[in-house]
Length: 272
Image (cartoon, rainbow, N blue to C red; front, side, top):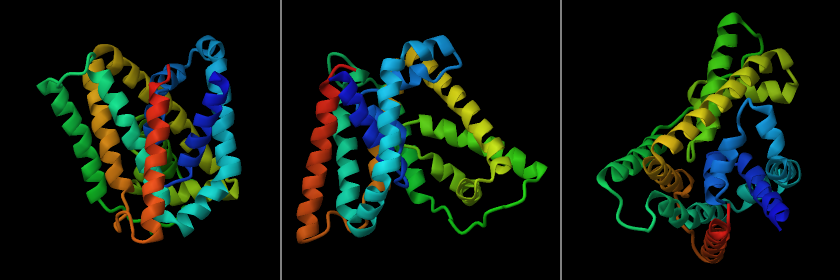
């Protein structure tokens, strides 16, 4: 059952990776595997090998979600964007009680410092909602020393963003003007162009995971409070401007919202 559960979570993670604005870190939090995922992003090969029962089915499900379900998800977002968005909003909302329980056990009102951390996380997402990033920047085809450094640094920043729940790595690449270049490099198989980005992403993943592990050890309640704010605020980036829609769209949106909420709420109650 544990293997089946991890494959299923991986499928949702894979689907989330093809949706602009959806954070993989938020999905990991929603399904109560975030701390385990952070724990294996390490240069310690022995530790990674020892956790194969966790990352192998999760990775297989994620790959399956990207390869086999990305087309379906893309079509759903093109033809039925409002219900599709509300499904992922439901996943996030259903996870919030689980995240809140990690701040204080037994559940009580959080202290001032935890409330401030939560508000800070929420504020970051509000700023990201307000800021409009242009997607019109052109893709660079020639690799220059300056572009090499930009891709290295941008890949590292994007990877750290992917580790943090609520923040989309693609958003930062867009903000840095590197998203078209990276996407074109992937599509064209331009390996020299992708090498600095890949190096940056690898370094960013290790650095980001190490930072989150340190924060969870040093100040777990405050860290989860910030995660709660980031996760709650990520709803703002997904919420359609038309709300729940009307007519058949309204019904489909409500069903999607309830289904996503129930899915993550039940997953959050299962042992991590």
